Length: 189
Image 1 (cartoon, one colour):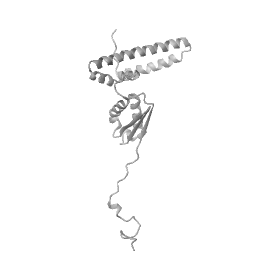
Image 2 (cartoon, helix red, strand yellow):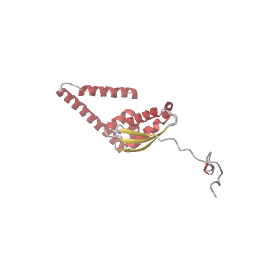
Image 3 (cartoon, helix red, strand yellow):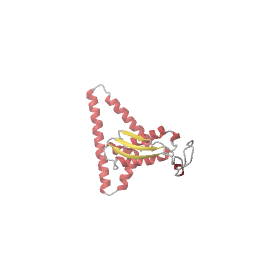
Image 4 (cartoon, one colour):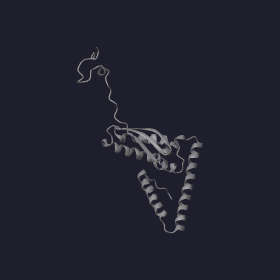
């Protein structure tokens, strides 16, 4: 039986279907049937995880870093690698790459990873009129990108800096305030 290739959209649909089926399994009234179904799913996941680990080990043994990178760049494979704790990139690297890939969609806004502590990713978002001018829309895109790249991140904190301070010219420091009456030499006696 030949394997059918899924494009990323179809793979996402199948992943959603798996989630729906798992919810149905969890709601089975018969506890024995529920236990068997859950054990079946867990055993399959463990078996496939071991298979993926061996694929990566073979790629690493051959020094084929390009293969590991190609696997990590594939959306479906990357999610499977994450599920099994096998992804070749650490959390900050995956988040940085996701934010870099998101940049064109932010239309002038910029986002910077400040750090990841525990399950919290801290980011700085600077508006640039992007996403239709909505900071909320930009933040939503950023949160979605982080969740996709690093599902282990439980919370995203986005710092939105206030407006840049206005520059004051040196000459204005030597001028008398408006309505102060008198010149620079006032007050001497």
